[in-house]
Length: 179
Image (tube, rainbow, N blue to C red; front, top):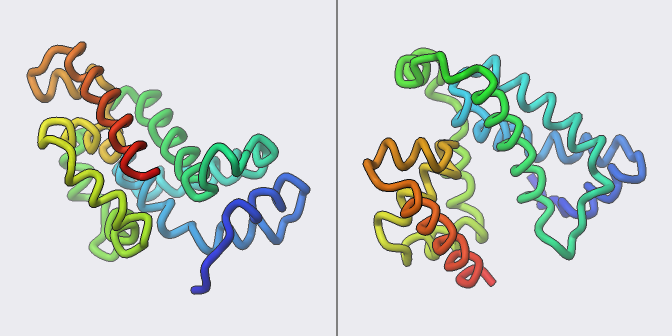
């Protein structure tokens, strides 16, 4: 598949160009479904999250500003927030380990494998490798597994204030490394 200028496609969506939304969907749906699936752990729910996220993308495209960040990051953030919102609303009643084994098929695209093969992914991987192991784990638990800072603190047996400081400092370090 040929590269997509995400920012231009989002600007097209802001103008009401349905073809731009279609290009975004065709280019990114597999990756974004995997992002949602990683968080919600159920394929049917992930598909609903993706649908709702693309409605958000269409409705909020005019708020995208290419000077503030990359278009792909913007749409990925919308999907991630939608998925986290669903998980929090569901109260995490599902046994995630059981759901993971039962619901995720082996052919599900891994968003992190796709990201690792991209140039941006390689840069991010290199920057993550520069973080201390504890800080890297906290970032991955927050942004890959979708855990809140309180949940991370509980899981790691680390004070909440420490987790918050690690997240803040790690994000600053990643931003510096990537710029």
